[in-house]
Length: 334
Image 1 (tube, one colour):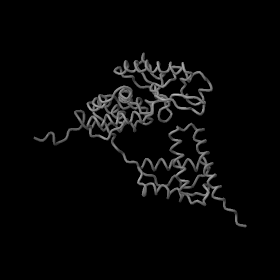
Image 2: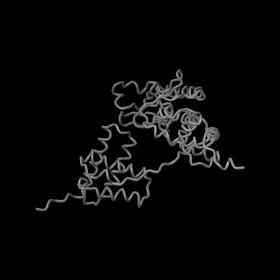
Image 3: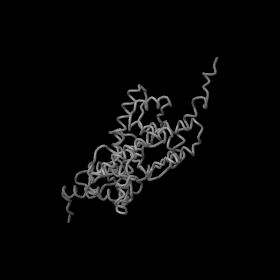
């Protein structure tokens, strides 16, 4: 007897259920929301590319290989994008479908090119900072002065700032790691004034029965009052409220990263600097300028939060130029 092929509606429901299972497992293992969004997107795209009559469980290595090859050949995506898609599918088959294809690890993966990071000179950093005002200036100064990533800066909370010790604690950074970096003396007073203004806004929110913020993991159940405490407030809160469906109330989120990205782009264009720089370039410049000042790579590794010192070593390209580097033979020719 020939087994009945599932209906198209059943296959669609099965694929939706599979994506829901993927999302649940990612959250159970405390993957970041950005990783979850990326993995779910790639898996959904892979499932949509399968033959309509094929159940997800029947997909094999040939389907995976063709999908990844199509990304490289037809879509011409970057190597890092193709590798991210591969990781998402690997997680799908191993952790969700509980299938371990023999030779899955041997599928060719794109070789990521080694590129020298874009770095701004000190005068260029000063020029860009001079084009910024208010909160964008303060955020850009912290990213350059502390080596923060953009999202790390956006997600700073009041309790993470220690004026007495001149320290900033970065919580739940990339790789779910905490680290401590310096608080530049130059921004201490502007940051205090910014927090005074932010506190007045928070007190107004409290007077209206609002003032709550999202808390990490299950801490809100452990301490329900913490979401309205000053220590847990965002250093850079959004101007507008959003409705948090998980708790059923209006709250302030932290400032969206796109606000800072637009401000930096406008400042870069206004400065006339002909470099393809972004907010992350400030972090690259932080590491490079510390190396130029003679600080050792291990110290910079800790400040940046790199797991492997080899990641930090890419900034040693600065030692090959300037007064501390190799001198070109052309410059010694009479």
